[in-house]
Amino acid sequence: MTELRFVGAAGLPAPAHNRDAAARALTLMRRWDDRAHARLFTAALGPARIRTFLAGVRQAFGDCSLGDPQQVLPGGVVYALQCERGEARMRVSLTDDAPPRIGGFEITRAPGTGPCG
Image (cartoon, rainbow, N blue to C red; front, top):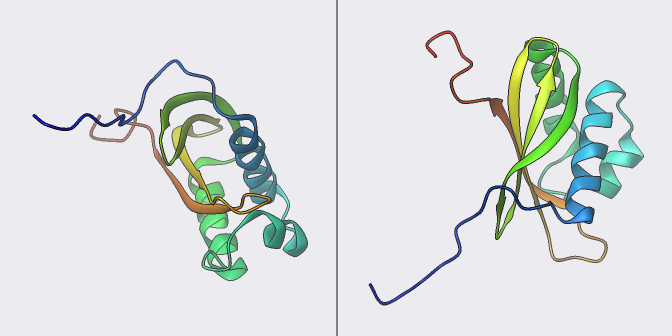
């Protein structure tokens, strides 16, 4: 091996600006706001796309609250979500813009919590 790369770590705190963005994204799931979306997400993650995605997540999981970071990666953070209908994971990646915006966003069922384990 000739190269070492940091691929992520568990047990580290999330950067404050990432945690704030994650919390604001969950707020949009409960109550949509076009202006808040425009300040939070990049243009590539347009309002119709994110609103539809968050509505589907809410339908599947119910209301969710932000939990602890599960993995801190060079490009973002994976958080635990505690939801009305199960556990989920949310990955939030921010741009280098000032202020940073969410450029990567994913919510999935937590490993081992689906119908197949």
